[in-house]
Amino acid sequence: MPKIIGNPEAKNIELRKLIQKTKLNNFYIKNHSNFREEILKQINLEDDVLDIGKSMREKFSKIKSKSLETLDVNLFQDYPDIVFDLSDEFDNSLENKYDKIICLAILEHVYDPFKAIINIRKMLKKNGTVFGYVPFLYQYHAPNDLKFQDYFRFSKDGLSYLFKEFSQVELFPIRGRISTPLQIFFSTKWKKYVERFKLNILLDKFISDKKNSEQCSGYNFILKR
Image (cartoon, rainbow, N blue to C red; front, side, top):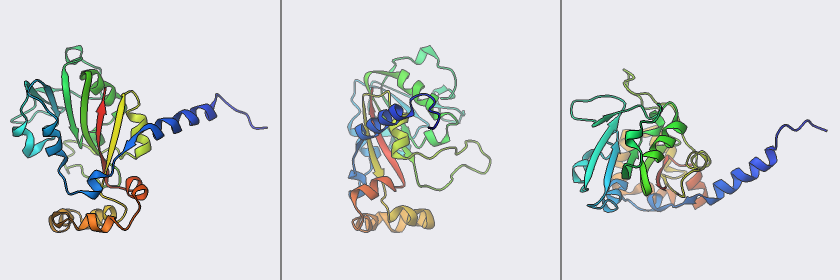
């Protein structure tokens, strides 16, 4: 008989239930749509909004809300309003402060994403929403000067566990089983010459929804506190 330490079987059952509870939505594999535009539609004039890393990019100026702040670990010329390491100890001045938090392509650059997510959740008001993106099968993309670093990649199972304290978790896979490796191989040319004409959507139609959702470039996500 093997020596059994703890109760690994019960934990495995718990993890399976957690993963099965996570909602997968293949909308962005099947449609040429901009997640940042969708985020704008869900922000109201009454909302207090935080954009981590100013990750809305060119859409940032289009955000219409009661208040809008930015957060980053580095200080740049035009932002942020708050300099804070998401993996550091929480600052109580940020608690329950925001209705909507935007966190696009941020968590892979954080050395402790588990602590970062705990802190982000604390920043949310009750029933608040986090909009985000993380890579899965994607190339390394830290700058040469390591002003910020590239630490992690996230599978759907990993995200289910990372976001386990949220009441609702919805993942939107980006690029499918065929277009993901091609995007890595052709890199910047892929967006310019292929995705612009929606050819990636055509290619991924040859693969099942399940395979596309499991072997993708990354995930947009929406979390509810």
